[in-house]
Image (cartoon, rainbow, N blue to C red; front, side, top):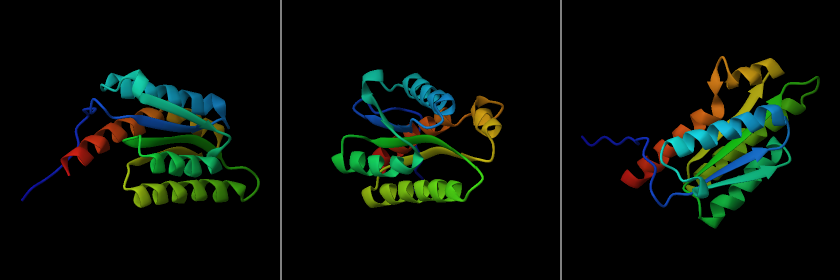
Length: 154
């Protein structure tokens, strides 16, 4: 029985796109820095990382779809932060973003990593952006490198 798994080994010619929202910059900027740091620490040249900024989490999937259709990137990392408020807007944005990212991944057969935090409070986001729960940007970057390597083996 054949078994396949990706390794944390970046392909020399692979480009990575980070699509990040400008909303909640104190959180998202830390996620972006973590993703860039993890990518370069695992062999991705800084010149092979494109950072695309969009207004908010709602706009991330359409930017990811545009990038995926362009065929220049081996993986797309989505980074943002949606914090629950007093209205249902939170559910619409967080759920729509996640569903849109999955659609992009499936439609384009491209690794699209969801690092968009959907949290109850700002403190929860801070814990996932370099705090007690690590850095979600780093986590999705490592998963992206692994998935790109896996794609090369399949």
